[in-house]
Amino acid sequence: MKKYYFTSESVTEGHPDKLADLISDSILDECLKQDKNARVAVETFVSGNTVTIAGQITANANVAIEPLVREIIKQIGYDNAETDMDYRTCKIDVTITKQSSDIAMGVDTGGAGDQGIMFGYASDETENYMPYAINMAHKLSKRLAEVRKQGIIPYLRPDGKVQVTVEYEDDQPKRIETILISTQHRAEVSQEQLRKDVIKNIVDVIVPAEVRDENTKIYVNPTGRFVIGGPLGDTGLTGRKIIVDTYGGYARHGGGAFSGKDASKVDRSAAYMLRYIAKNIVANGYAKKCEIQVSYAIGMKEPLSIYINTFGTGKRTEEELVELVKKNFDLTPKGMIDYLGLRGPIYTRTTNYGHFGKDDLPWEKIIKI
Image (cartoon, rainbow, N blue to C red; front, side, top):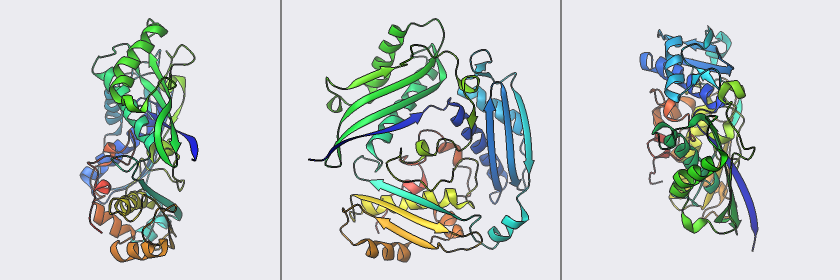
């Protein structure tokens, strides 16, 4: 019997890196509302009570960036510059240029906007074909935000992290070994009260009893205090949570971030398309696990390579599956954008709690291959 432990992490929408991701994706969506062919590559940096936005936008759009950013920060819940950030008083710096003509030359003809490698993955170990650890971590971190916003645990602040360790036997998840939750809170609450409320209103609500036992360890704020958080406690930057965004480290990542980029960037569109293909290979019964890699060259339409690994679980050879993919799916940038409908303002729906595993996103649809 093969036994091992695997750990994945998720973060709340108030984590500084996710605040930066959401600002970038919100600017992208606002551009796409006005111009579906907008070219956007925007990055956000947050530190203390300052937000810095930089990048390239080429679009027939007029986006009022500063009020949009303040509204996002308000919605997340940052209203105190002494503990994290204040949407009313924070400084916002914006430096936006247009897309380089050298890059546009390749994209205008339907080619990839850059060279790079992208991965997609799916597994049958959960109902949404995601690895178990990241799936559970996302559910817990999303619940952590919900209990704060709904006033169930009223003394919580927006910043938070979750980590879940899963015990596997013969490559199947059997039980949860460890749950770690770190959450920002107001200064007056005790560690004992915080732990009690978090276990009752988050862990007990989300984690099924059958995957916990007397040996499951639960840690809440291991340092004992987490009052200073958000951009005041740590800087945040777009694209710094790519493992949280994808498969929690259980599958490989090509390296390119997603948030703030329109779909002409294959970092984003190809990763979505490959998740779609991998999920449907598993859902159609061709394999229990599937990982796909493609590579692109700037300005070229077709991928340079396609690689599939089913980790010994395939009912077809991997060479046959590659041919199946080539026959059924258009992997050119335009083909992927059109097939998945990636020109719409859908990207703020992806920012938090993973870009994959959400039923309402087009690359999560199951079809018959």
